[in-house]
Length: 82
Image (cartoon, rainbow, N blue to C red; front, side):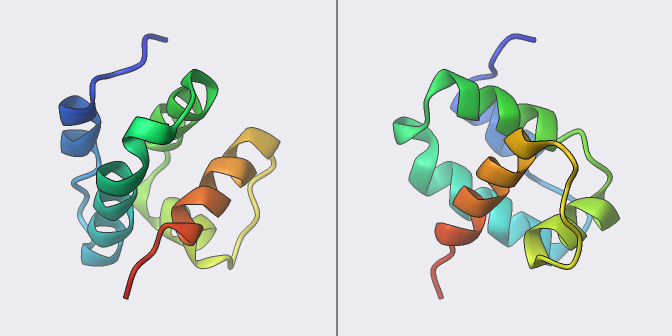
């Protein structure tokens, strides 16, 4: 899987839920430049997750089985600004 550019990832961060849009867009806008290739690939793969399950992961209500997802989810949650 090739890593997508920032603009393509930002487009893929647009979801059907406002909460997901906020979390994912904030993450890509603030963290893209400092993410390593492995994190970018994990984030890209995470974006393939259905919205309802992705929201469960990001809200901490469900823990993904894949430890790579756990790491990138933790980074997304840490990047949240209020």
